[in-house]
Image 1 (tube, helix red, strand yellow):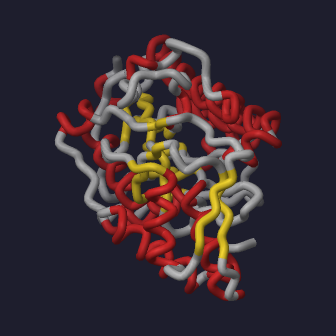
Image 2 (cartoon, rainbow, N blue to C red):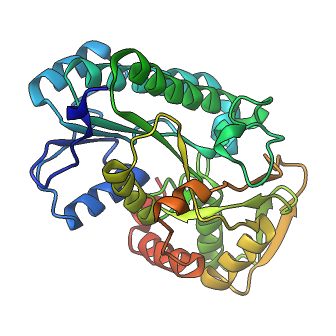
Length: 321
């Protein structure tokens, strides 16, 4: 591979954060600003449709980013994945393809592609190691999204193998934090529970419905920790194989709901609805490879949820749309 691809990021390098307004992208922007990086490139959806190869090619030719962090995509919880599978697979496959190809054509020195823990089989061993990829059937409720994310991993691997590009992939666990999606039609478990509890508190409603049995277990990572891991990997990781990013700790949905209730609305009575889907029984990442490199999460779950709720309250009018 071309040794020039392995130069580390400097403060003045042109760094393109694709998806800079979202949960992950906005956290990465905060982390890069805090790290002294001054030449950050962004484009809104109105300025650049990342599904359009011609538009993306033109943008890369005009801006010539040296480093690319690909955090853009169409995302959502069980409801969104189940009702909009065509949109999830179409949007994400195109976004990955256009950005990765343009990064190759215009000589980006490094690209970080962010996937998702849903890439692993439904029956994967727990914690889920990187080696579990493509070893069994996927969870049906998010299969379309998972296939698109797997394609992104293989896309980066293929451009690395054929062209020598230093394109790496990281698989984050379930995320939460400021700028999350709090729309109940498409949100993940943390923002959905947070909004339900908050609105029950505002109305004085005594009960709050929680989807599923409450028994599935989930690992949760504050998005600021992910952003820190992204910068860490851009500076210290150059391997072809994707790498997991998480805490290595999990809790049940019932435990999570209880913790959220204590933070948001202690008087609420939680009612679990077993007629609604649970999703995977457990999703815990094996993060030993990342720990071996020297990175660990810093944000305690309770403190992270409290901070996220404070942000949600301050931004309630905009966040609930």
